[in-house]
Amino acid sequence: MASDMTAYKTYEVSVPFRAGTDGYASYRIPALVIMDRGTVLAFAEGRVASSADWGDIDLVLRRSTDGGRTWGPLQVVSRNGDGTAGNPAPVVVDGGRIVLVQVHSAAGATEDRIRGGEVPPADGRRVWVQDSDDEGATWSTPREITEHVKCPEWRWYAATPGHALQLRHGAHAGRIVVLGNHSLPPSGADSGTEGKYNGGHDLLSDDGGATWRLGYVDDNPDGYVNVNETTAAQLPDGRVYLNTRTDAAAPGNRADAYSTDGGASLVKPFLRPQAGLVTPVVQGSVLHLDRPGARRRHAAVLRARGAGPPGPDDRAGQRQRGRHLAHGSHRGRPAGRLLRPRATGRGDHRTALRDG
Image (tube, rainbow, N blue to C red; front, side, top):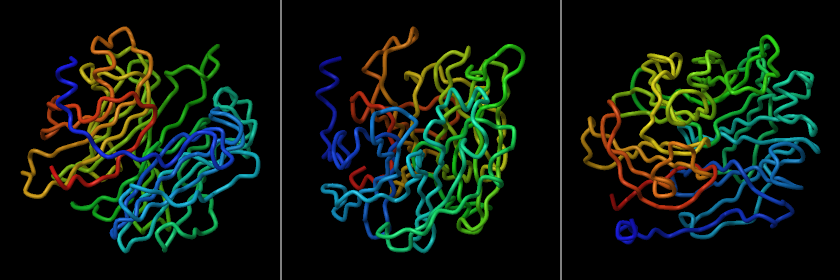
């Protein structure tokens, strides 16, 4: 393995967020977008007191005008008092406007309490959206869209993590697609925190983020594939490829699905686990690479896989974690190569590889 590791190309790296700086104990849930003129926007949750997923959390941003080599001062984009404003899901739409979906909850609304039905809806997970017309320098006041994109019976709710996407070609070109996940109320003696009550969905907008509705919903509590944090990319043939985290009975910790109608529905539910895609139970990210001259049937998809303790089936261990480039038409399991062998937590991709 050591000889293989020395063959990897070295890429330039910068760090937009460091724990313990700018008044935040930690930063989590990153998302990246790149403007047409090259400005890079890095979003994250700025967690004030700890690395916990709940409490005093602000949605923060740093901007780079030199391709991500250096970063400007930290900006607070959205704040929810002493509660949580997080799960940034940004996308750059036609014309250069940035649409930013996010989720808010009260300070004491932990995920277990929400899933257990102990938090009233007003303090639970609620969905908001902002936009910027000046590459993230200033932002509109957040407006709530919960009633349009969250079923009343759902308890937990999160967007992405990672960037959203605007479909670029096909019958639904221009549509904004934001991936999300939620939990169902439990049955019997269950508490609601069990993984089988996880579900996935997406949010759709066909008017640049002015109005929103739900697209597909996949939340079958059979315990085989538990759809959770999901990421997506549009393939050259117009399909949307979706890849999700799962911690259920199915082999492996990833599963995937496709949509042929712009995210409104799935061709089949997330029934195909990817046992060969070795990863711990954590969020991932996928990005289609629009490589000049590439054949349409052989798209390249960049995948980020987080790191954590190896599971019982993680025979490849740390060697499989990091950034991978997969080639193929996404029929069956595409071949791939490791771009960057690195242990990571949550991550996001938004890049253009100019050197192939």
